[in-house]
Length: 108
Image (cartoon, rainbow, N blue to C red; front, side):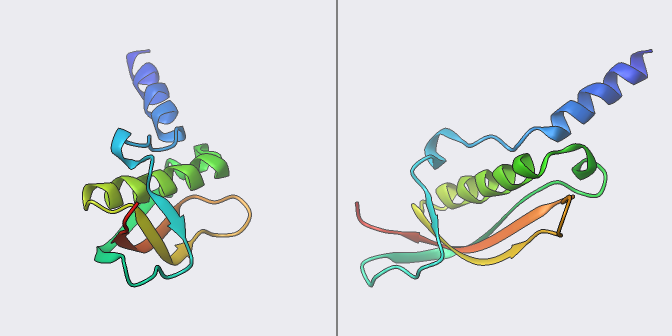
């Protein structure tokens, strides 16, 4: 019985989207390169899901979690803009979503 409860908690946790950290809310994601006033800080990859937990996670939570993970990592670098480089998600029901991008710090 105890193992079943632990498994249920793991499945529920695996189904939720990665939360957005407090400092990451202002980070914006775009496909357009910024103007010359922005400073390049590096590249980051955000992801959510895997072959085990992805089966129990909605597509919306996989996409939101990957986006939040990307924003969290960009904020850690001090960035406020991410230019998407790649997006990977299988068609139909997704088991994972991966986003990669270039991080910039742009003036307000």
